[in-house]
Structure formats: C-alpha cells, structure tokens
Length: 138
Image 1: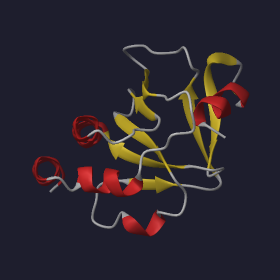
Image 2: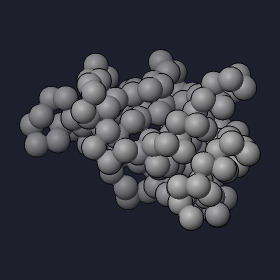
Image 3: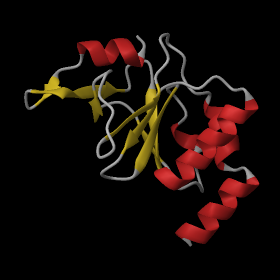
Image 4: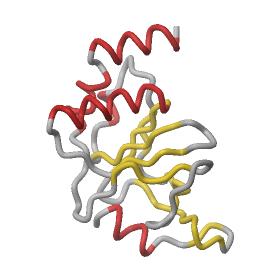
C-alpha cells in the first residue's frame, strides 16, 4: 500500500483532522534524519534523477523522514540517522496539511514509489553531505 493510501486510512491523532497516526513497517520503513542533513541528501537525490518516495518534514523537531523499502535496518551504520520499522507509529499531517510551523510533505508520490535505500545512503555519504555531518555532529 502506498504511503498516500495509508494516510487516507490512518486514524486521526486525538480527533485532530489534520494529523494522522501512520503505521510504519507495513510494506515500507522510514529513515529519520536531522533536517539539515536530510535536505542536503534530498537536493542530491533530486539532481541525480532518482525516483523519490514520500519525504516528510517535521518542523517542531527539525527532522526529515524518508519512506524506504523494508529490510535495510543493518545498512545505516555510521550515519546520523534512525531506521524506523515494525511496531513504530509516526504522527504525520494529512494529505492537504502543510504549514510553516508543522512542516508537511516535501514529496508524496501518487503511486507506491519509495526512495531507494542505496541511493539515499549514497546521498547521505556524498562529500558535501559528509562535510556537513562532520561540521555539525562531531
């Protein structure tokens, strides 16, 4: 099921129509990155022509969430990321919700496209992204 379809079916968070409780690990996982690093990787992915799956910006926590395929938990060693999978829930805005404070969907394809984990890993290891990681997180 696509993330877009999952959002349509997801329950509301505390009866707030704009927020949904999205179950992770059913056909796709999520990779959480700090926003500054994730945005650099997103820019690299966009310029390289790679298909990009759903990407959520969490404004209050300054994070990006990439929807990726399941089964990549052991491949993120040494990167400032967190892999989220089964038994994980994500508070996400509904399809039409985007605002300056909360954030919103930077990418949300109409099909079941997911960001390729290998391409995302390569983007996160790109020299200008790696330089930002060293500068900010060490």
